[in-house]
Amino acid sequence: MNTKLTLTIEKTIIEKAKKYANVKGRSLSDIVENYLKAITKEDNNESIVLTPIVKSLKGTFKAPGNIDYKKELSKRLTEKYL
Image: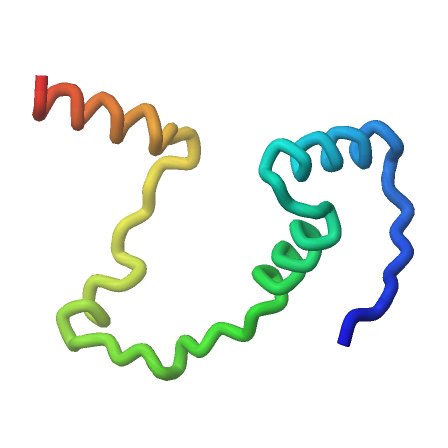
């Protein structure tokens, strides 16, 4: 069952969001609904069984706060394949 929702959002954001939705061939309502579904999804982490090795490794690695993951990945893949 669909229900109407009224939101107060900055006008420029609404205009940009409508353009984005149009480019993607979707309605703005659909995009907002899917976003809300994603952030309210109930994770069922309890059903995931970790092996003893994974449990022992969990939380042991701490990446530096200033790391640019995409840049590092690109650098490593370039070194590997070029």
